[in-house]
Amino acid sequence: MINLKELIASEIMDEALGLTLEDIESMIEIPSDEKMGDFAFPCFRLAKTMRKAPQMIAADIAERISGSEYFAKVEQVNAYVNIFINREFYIKALVNEVNEQGADYGKSNGGKGKTVIVEYSSPNIAKPFHIGHIRSTVIGNSIYKLYDATGHNVIRINYLGDYGTQFGKMIVAYRKWGSEEELKANPIKSLLSYYTKFHVEVEEHPELDDEARETFVRLEAGEPEEVALWEKFREYSLAEFNRVYDMLDITFDSYTGESFFSDKMPAIVDEMREKNLLVESQGAHIVDLEPYGMTPAVILKSDGSSLYATRDIAAAVYRKQTYDFDKCIYVVASQQNLHFKQWKKVLELMGHEWEKDCIHVPFGLVSLEEGTMSTRHGRVVFLEDVLNNAVAKTKEIMLEKNADTPELDEIAKQVGIGAVIFQELSNNRIKDYTFSWNKVLNFDGETGPYVQYTHARASSVLRNATEAELASIAAGEFDPSYLTGESAYSLVKLISRVPEVIVDAAEKYEPSILTRHLVDIAQSFNKFYHDEHILVDNADEKLAKLALVAASKTAIANCLALLGVKAPERM
Ligand code: ARG
Image 1: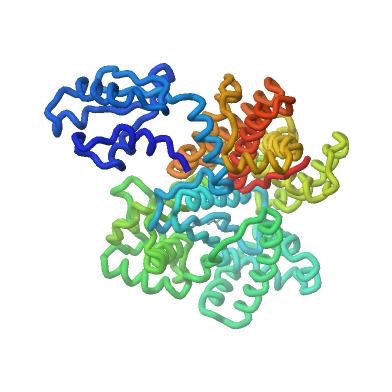
Image 2: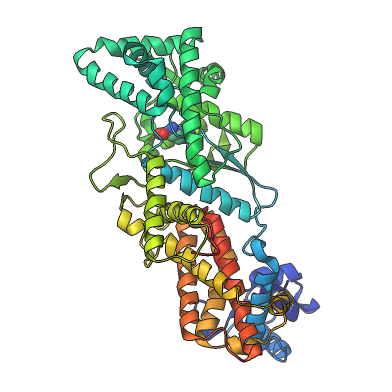
């Protein structure tokens, strides 16, 4: 594999510089202005050790390396050595690098030895897995893949909302209005209807709330009847969640949800008490956060039952002990910003200095064209229905377009689901957005189907290559002089940036950075495809162009994979 920076570093390398090859490599920059070259080497740092003006050092280096066959031109400008790569050499090196690495192209190992937890999805048991949950699920899954691709050891946690006072309500409602048959036949929809009914009835009968609270206390105390019902709700709900995860092809390493921490809380509460953090307020135990400009964190309620915040604190402590993470990423809606701020402060006050490695990655709200969702009022759109609908609509569109594929159903699934995922990851995550079918399934816009179609187009071109041509491409034998035109060269440059874009997207917890770059690559590929005739008579020219098509297909497929979207060969 030819790494350009490494190669330039080895040309610059000289004992007199007093730098290692790695030092030199890390100092090489990519100038923002293309007129300043493809790469630049700054010499400021050398002035001290070499006791020479940096301009002079730059001039010496420029003169020494200017004869290299790899460079078209080398210039000294102030303290910089500006390097213009020999285009043909550069194109060949990059295309071969991509074709050689295949599915590994884009990966790097900056995260080697570091453990990162990504917590995402985390739906609530006995409640619908609705379109609001898709954001955490899909953004979190991509963040996991980005960290994995940058060499981290990543643990995926689904922190199920399987505990809390709402289970008191759910159990009361089920006992009053529910039936085993209904529950079996249609678990979540029945549970949702009982829960909705509870909220209607409680308006008239406020005593229901007290009953629910008592029931939750019994559950927390481990009363067998309440526990059995809770287990039933959990089991049925998980089966439904897993159906959705299967459709999205998403898996987790752990499903330790809130209930897992119920017996770990007393120790945490004791610790807070010892550290003098708890104060009593109207019978409840709280941590006063007024000095930090926040409302108090309620740790124990007046009836002694625990809270969301308490479980989250116990979970963080447990994760640090269990995984000794370098970073713990929480992909949770921005509506919970205050909760996470309070929680971090409490961890800090407890003396856990690793709280700085706990990162809340918030995202904005999804609304429907007909208004926002509300579980309480039963106004929800189920994620499973959205995905099924996307697949059905995609199939219709593909039939209209006379899609060339024998596996229509499988591909409609990849494209329909891919479209929903891609749309989620297209915008900066913090932005609120409105879910719209027209936008999601537009095959011509900056959408999943458009990028997937571009991938299928590249695949289709490559199906015209002979065995011999594919062998030459694999061996890296082609003449790059056919690829120096502007549209081919811009495409090569975009592909070359994939590894650094992946690192940037991971560091910023922002998959949309990669999505946007991928759209740029797809557009650039389509420009190349329209500007240049690929399957030409001249065998050498055809081979060179096919080599670039192969590299483009790999780059597109790898980026799609990091978003969690499939790359169909035909559409
Ligand atoms: N179950 C919660 C919800 O649906 C999200 C959990 C977020 N994670 C956390 N560690 N608090 O709102």
